[in-house]
Length: 177
Image 1 (tube, rainbow, N blue to C red):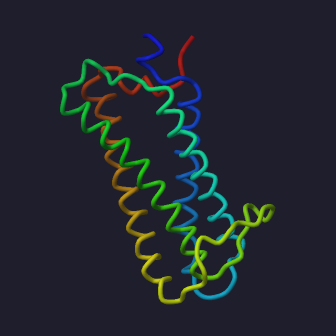
Image 2: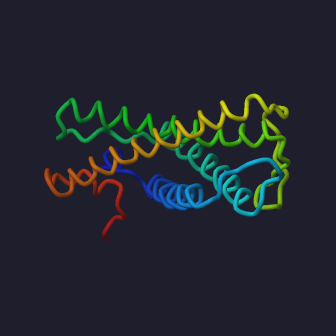
């Protein structure tokens, strides 16, 4: 398989690293108590820091994808190639939406947050009690939409492994040498 037909090691590492961090992030978000007034605690600081890590990695992954394109699998019917591309771009947009709305949520709360308690983060907006509920709603919508898109993506991957048995999924798995 030529390099243009499969994902390289950087793309695979970034993909699976984001997958792992999203699994931790969603788990942390679900287990974290409802956030009310007051400064962010350890769990929220971790949640924000992981979100920023995911944001940085997804931006890096996006740049890598644009500068190192991989040809669509030619054996797929056109509807699968188009829907695959659409779902991939939707995943990028939703990760960006979820992370940015989370950062805005912290800013509207007036929280002084830092990246793993090491690097102070800039506020994206001033404290705004009125906007908190709206941006929290948008954050939750982005989270649920992202979960649904991930579910579609995983279901398609499993379909290629167990139903079509066409080797498409192997393009993102570690190479066997």
